[in-house]
Every structure is written in structure tokens, then in C-alpha cells.
Image (tube, rainbow, N blue to C red; front, top):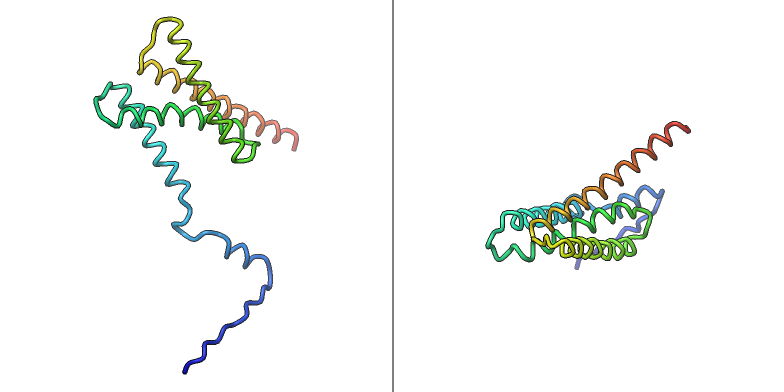
Length: 145
């Protein structure tokens, strides 16, 4: 009969705990999921703009119309906790889509490609404003240091 020896692990410092908690290579799927979401959204926008007859056009375009403004709004709401930021970003994305739809219907210019372009433009402007705000705050901090 064999005896299995178990060694007691003695903690010497907190760096061992940090190494043990850190995920190994291939365990963090966030960049992969972000890339897949970007690809699906880009394909959805492309399919809507070229007026494709693909059955994937509807779901991919809907994903783009929700994900593009939600991502831009989530970038602007950097100070919130993750759950609150997600809820606010999705609600903001719905509001952006509703405002674009209402505006296009009010001026009698409704079209799917036009809506995709309008939502893309608004999302890009929000991201541009966030980038400018961060750049301005960074230069202000450098001046005060």
C-alpha cells in the first residue's frame, strides 16, 4: 500500500496569492468576446447598408444597433460599477435608437440604411467626445504635476 504525502503550503508573502489568482494564458476570454461582438456588429451594419437578403441581416443589424451606442455610452460612464454601467448603457442605446427612429419618421425620411448611418454617427460622436474629455483631463493633470 502506498502512502500519499501532502505538504502543507506555507504562505510567505502576498505575491504568491497574486500569482495563484491571476488567470493563466487562454483563460481570459474578454478580448475574444469583444472581437467577436465587433465582427458581428460590423457584419450587421454592412448587411444593412448593402440591403442584403441574408437571413442573418436582421439579428446582426439589431445587435449592431444596440451594441454600438451601448458601447459608446458605457465608455462615457466609466465611473459606475459594471452592472449599473451595463443597465444604463443598454437603456441609453434604446433611447438613441428611439430618437433616431422618431426623428426620421417625423421628417418622412425613414430607411434602414439611413438609420444605421445615423446611429453609427451618433455613437462615433459620443466616443469622440469621451476621447477628447480624457485627453483634456490628461493634459490638465500634466500641467498641475
